Length: 282
Image (cartoon, rainbow, N blue to C red; front, side, top):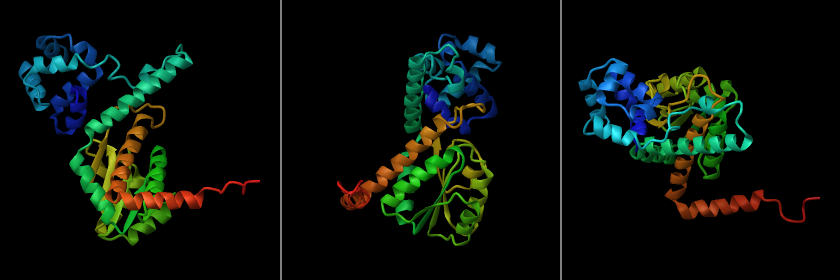
């Protein structure tokens, strides 16, 4: 994992002053890699000692070691979708930029994931008698996709577009029910409130959200964190949607592997029953 990925992963563990340093690094990575420790401390208004402490918290021996890793990061690593789209960009240029951004998103997501938590979530989902998936807005597409995949794997998964039906699910929730809440902000009321009610009924909560101390993450039994570098002004949910899809795909593959022979047999049955036989289409 490169230094920017490490900063994102450990961000919530940092002190307020260390977060100030982290934010500055994420926004000015290519410039800082050419600075001395004195240049950095004077520009941001912190002590050299705090900079050294910050780099050691990330796992580096000191500032020089940190700066060496930072120099390897490409100039566009800290760019956001809104920042890099220019009016004069050709279609080919835009396609290339989107490709780079999506590749970056997937790479950062995989680096951020805690494999131990992934394994725990897989076991919880496999043992659950009912799985309720929540997601609205940009997260709805991710929720529906995950719901379809779990149903195909034979799990008792539910997804509702009607919030009243969703709240009804919380009434019948118990310790054998798992709620998978997908929300980039972790503060969406339509997601947080049902989870609160489900938690009161001893249901387990899995959050797929950005890494921060949000209302959703605070109540979640298991947190699967995605990248948190999108600006407030963004073109819908672009990188966040891709990162949440990636997390759900990982869970799907791990669940499918649990009994691979049975999974393949079920996939073949589904294909045979859904596929329209040749000659019947008129």
